Image 1 (tube, rainbow, N blue to C red):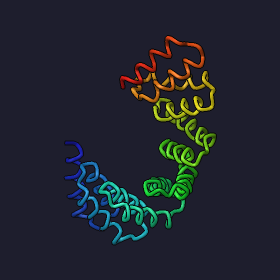
Image 2 (image 1 turned 180 degrees about the horizontal axis):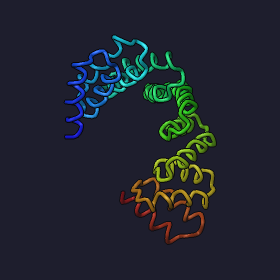
Image 3 (image 1 turned 90 degrees about the vertical axis):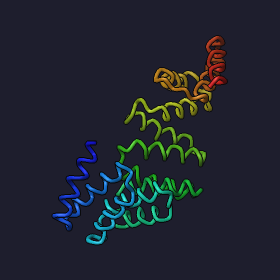
Length: 220
């Protein structure tokens, strides 16, 4: 209801000041919140008709195309955005995501590294880079970025699972348990978490806990 009220107000203001690109951007974002993609695209295109180098409009237009599954147009808009502002972290992040989806892992890594450099506080970019490094067999580099995710978001289950799995693979079972237990306390129901817990408990001679964790893994 509140968003609809904002949309109604912005529509009136845009009608009065059609060349106000800031207002049109606000209206486009409000449309996006209500999943009114075509309306959002219309407003973003109106902004770009007045300002072809508006990075925000290009970025959000890329988002709308990505949401509709048109990755070609999404990539085109994100590339335009970073050609204007090479340090636009969000566009680099989504370019990395698109390249990963298309199997271009090396390209995805380059774009995501740029995203992290531009926006070092973006936990999503660090998480994505960690996953990409794992795909390239760069476990230690992945661990650095997952640890950074946890500094930014201590309750991030994905990072806790991944750090636990990483230390399990390295046979550092006590270290792995620190992360796996944290994920368990946060209510994770990931079967892989309980499998790794079971393995770590077994390797540290905690057989009762190992059986319990492995049984739960099988149930999930």
